Image (cartoon, rainbow over all chains, first blue to last red; front, top):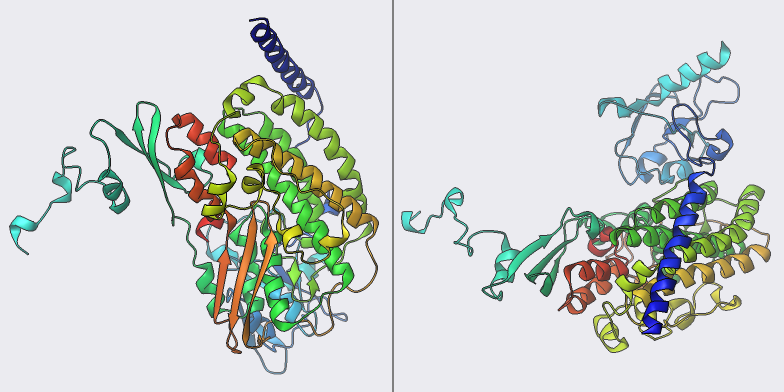
Length: 149
Length: 397
């Protein structure tokens, strides 16, 4: 009988301890990042694998390093890349279907010239499937134009 | 078609039970008692953690029989292994079990390395151990939150996610992703760690130890939780072994069995850590053993990060997308957060493996549910289901 009463008192005390922890955390500062009012620290995104982008060539930032060797196209497990070779080695079409991509880095690691890399775009959104099919050559030119301005 | 044989599906009345429902329900109904209710738990019920469907026969609030129905999340991972080269198949491993992807990475990479006799460098082995144990902690933390959520405690999962996000931040530095990681490569790992990774990991270990004390005060000592779990769903060692259950479920039943000790792989032999066997074989025992395993993993990470050697992280001429496996077969087992993960690889020397068989611990652990749930209250059956730590993508593969 005494034991049962004591157990109940202990049980009630355990609830009070739990509630006091909850109360303490209620008045502690907020830990979450409220997007879009705040964004995460860009340093923590330095290794984040976002959608692919082409690495600009050393001499011309609007030019790609790609030599259209198709190594990435063959390595990709999801068949999400299309590279069409133009006259010479430079590609004329470089399409990347992000809906099929699993961000596995098979293309990045198979590229002999280091023409591919992961971007750090965490806030990318699209309202249709077609918007997820990215033309990386025009993106590269756009980035170069932004950088030159 | 003979008109008398034709059954109009829209004209089925409730009393024509034999025609209603799908194959599993009809089969299950056949052995049902007259006065019982048959209930479908899931496939889209929050407490079934994904798309598990459990058929239960109820007498009032007591479960007479239970039968899990699988396959709602079957993605043919075994078959995909046969139509892709090993290198292309590797990212699949992160998707089999999204809570402990690095252990699956390891099981497949280990099987390939064993078949091709590749020895990864020492630094890579250390990085593998650190990342795998960090990932194990994050898996256990999510389980802890979700399990208490199943039992009706909504707050603790928010505490668990705070630490889980920190682990995700740490693992993102080396793996590049936060959930379906594909970090291992044949003969090493894909990225080296930097000073930021080491600093964050070292800071995280004492922080989590402090937080575990809060977990204990907030949840483990809570009288409501203890009354819900103590003595519910006992599973003895015998039945665990018969169903092939591994991991915390088997250890809680009293058998100190862990792949990291039984079939030592990598450099786990070099580290000091205890393999606890549970204090009790009920839901509360399984709960305690997982919390204890977080501490075990912290010990391993602490030792590994102190003695992290320098050197390369990937062997020279590591296998790439066009790599052909030598003919033969191999099996590699690792200890995942839910038990023994095994990959059986058969190759005929061609471009793609001949067969990839994935052994997932969740599948075997789930088989115990039908046995353990018999005669319990429905709410206790949910507690048993939660205590098995099921990840349905892994069960279905």
